[in-house]
Length: 214
Image (cartoon, rainbow, N blue to C red; front, side, top):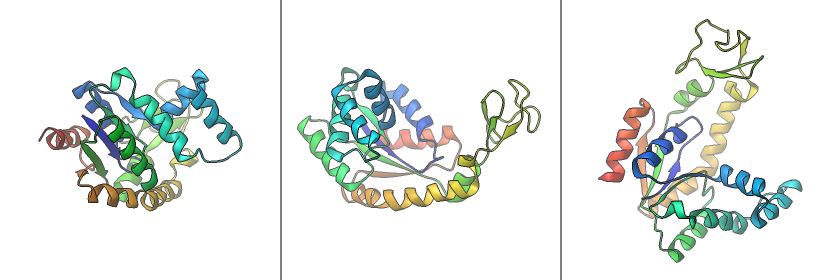
């Protein structure tokens, strides 16, 4: 089962990818994790990417594709994969399609987890961080025993700037601007599967399961 996950920040892609990975015994591949692993190991690809990043430049698409290809040809991808965070552009999608065709690993589904803006804002602005120990809790899903107080150390909980409403809404607009062409691309290819991500995580997973096993 070869899958791509799309969805705005706060859509729960990580949770769903973890469940899908367990169900099908396939790896959840985050491009951020791939880059960090290559940098940590000091691979040729990682060092090449580091050169661009150190200069404050974007890593070229062909290098990103090579890093992804290197990961997808690993042994644990023999039964499939879940790509999260890639592709980000139509050009990357074209390159990925070519690479998958060359390696006989066609995509089965592109899962587009849709969540209304207000739900995303409510989810992301409810995160709180302890100013003493750095622990993170969530007012909706994992609330502290005492309002404003960290369960782990008793420190004060606060909302980070990254979790503020203005920042979250800006991230949402950026996501829409960059991802809509990609959504249109995969819809034309007949691979896009829209999933209602506003429900409880278990319900969302069952909806995804019905799609991929249907």
